[in-house]
Length: 473
Ligand code: H79
Image (cartoon, rainbow, N blue to C red):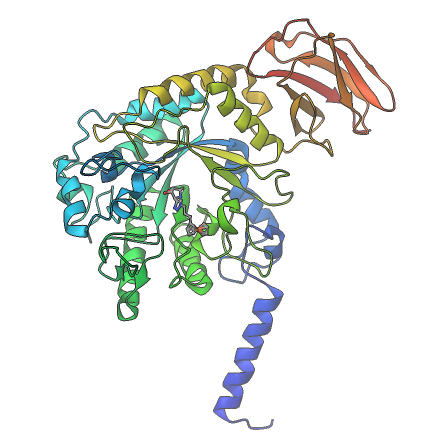
């Protein structure tokens, strides 16, 4: 055997690892198939293992996002100043120094908070999971963090941990409980603002990192995430604030791995790393990026993204965190149609509520969610566990979702002439019926299209679902 010097062996070993990492890139929202057959690599799993891990999430289709923090105290107004920007960003846009912003904590006392009520509102709307802010960009921990005094237990008049109550209640009512966690942190001493006219301790959209403090902040994050995962057993970790220049893809990969090691079947969004392509939220395609699903924000990708898991998060008005004067509510029709549109493109819908500092979900949200729930009660079958539309082009009258052997037509624009014309998709129809009441409908199918005889009046003004059962050919 030839003898090699130590550096040569190290170099050989390094190139071997490099080759391995090329052959087996880390799992990514853009290329979930990359992990197939790769059980040895950290964070990786076989395709079957991944399918099993993602199953509940893919079937759920609809979740509640909750932005709740001490920003609900100023509720969009600071010293008479208001902004078109969102409520949870007030520390940044009102340029509030840390020491002043901290005072909102003492005023935060959500005495009307009722975990059972919140979970019931989500459940009745047809939502299957809840994602709540454990720590937003403002750095305030909304859970009992033993390593921070800037948390709900130590700094507020409430002195209780609403996350414990919510986690327990979600479990009781059969919803998955999940956490949002911001990587950017406006309160942590490691980070500061360097922008003309801006307070160095108020936040902005690109905090700087004191290089000497980065390791300490990483340690802090990891410890908080360990607390979150081990105490509350979240089903998803939803990272955000990853776009700052001091956060790297390698940091993201390490953090992804760290969280998966804490809880192997947890699901983590793509904002843990640098993959996200702007607000489009889906991954860039120049390399493989870490994360299990893409995160379009306030938008629905026009054609979805076949083969990729994604979830559109959206507000019900124009803010995430509560703002007392934001009355720009979407109608329940818009909300339901967004859900349908997203499902027809193969994604999930994460719909936000911004509770008040008293602990109440705004009444306008509660009302709309109840209407969404009414629709979901009859039509949930056409949403849950469905996959994207089988039609190559978007239908003129609405959307479609599918399940094996079955298509659900979601009709937004009901035909005036009593005939719904559906373009062909290469299968023979066996049966057509209205989902409400399972009323059978007459139809004619030829090579080009399927023509369905429908009642004159639309059964549901929001969207009426027609089920098509077909054979395999
Ligand atoms: O928590 C809610 C918002 O507070 C948070 N995400 C949702 C879920 C949010 N943070 N920032 N924004 C929304 C808008 C910020 C956009 C930008 Fe960028 C950050 C523009 C430039 C840096 C990220 C990177 C988006 C485009 C490039």
